[in-house]
Image (cartoon, rainbow, N blue to C red; front, side):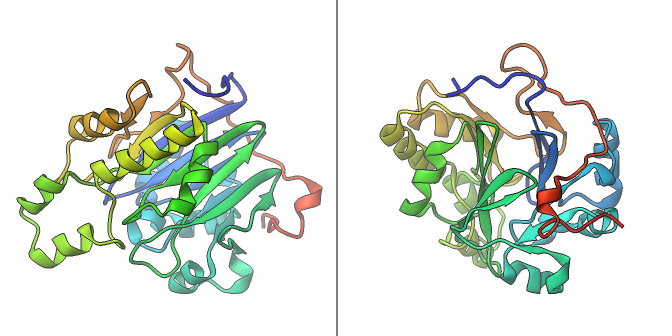
Length: 287
């Protein structure tokens, strides 16, 4: 059960895809449309947006967690559409972005963009300067951490704030160790800069809930098609957090994460958004 009730049309949270092929999560709240990552191919991305009644021009902010292709393939589309790109300096440099192309996200430094508070979270992954993010808006808090090899203790407090936690549960350790991956790739995935296992995800969530007493909705992300199964991931994590809603994100299909909470969809109407005048120094104007 969430700490707060989400009621339409306050919030819409849609997973576009989650896995090694593509990752993207859409959040609409307080009249702002946000993407966390945009890893679908441009063609697939356009189709997903269209199915939701949106266009690239409807996206206000894109928070890019890191530069790997499964998180950024549609970024040029969104740049041309005039979306504000928010990412770390290391990720921006890895993507070849100039200083005028993005808004810098600094670890642990909260920043308000278009009336939404973004708290960038440092995560351990084999990329230039990867981030998770805690997004706060209108009394709603969403935490997204999709690629990380371990959960540092400092991340537990922001996770405990969240009404919805999207966290990686990439692999079952036995399936990975006994599976077809070459030894070097198994070592990478299992390392502290690789990907989070089902068990490690469950242990971290247990610590969060034990100390906070919260009951967030938990969505497991970035499940390996080779080394995991949705039912395995959910069962493993659920053993650590009994009584808490745990679900696995679909690898390929868009899913409205909040549609079935109260039996009705929490869908916002599609619109071409307007940005607050106070944000002119942060938000690049659409061309």
